[in-house]
Image (cartoon, rainbow, N blue to C red; front, top):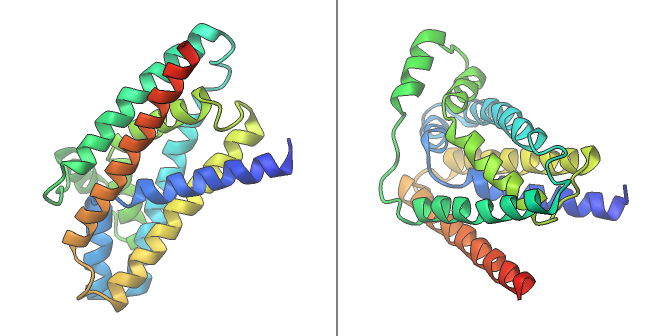
Length: 217
């Protein structure tokens, strides 16, 4: 595969991973609080655990699209489904006004597994959020269905590698900010960043709609 294309695919994944990790949620708020109270190392280890679980979800999502685009009908269906998924996720982030708490499922999982380290806390907490898998299924449908990445092993691997790097980069920045700029960084700041992420998703959906209209005309 062309190295330039692999680089582009990695960068697409990097940006996507970074933006996906920004919206406020249990992981981000926990890192923010833990970093302020217990230091950078614990916050970063929690982010690393969440990153590993995100890599697993992401790998499952992208692997599920292998060989699905061999027919024009499958490609058209995938393109059509990706747009409403983006709109739903975008509106969800734009309309966010409060910090979401830990869901009932996550609490039950944590009570059963009893994670004792920062790494396992981040890993388990993200594992108990199947919405992450749904998000990456939507992302994979956009990237593969619209030809932004190649429907091949190397292309998907480069994209997933970029996504994981982007996710960890955000957690690294958040851990540092929580430790050294706790008074300036608040959950309100994360909510504002969530709104920005939602707007980006809605703009991407709009671009895809315009592109599909042009293809049909």
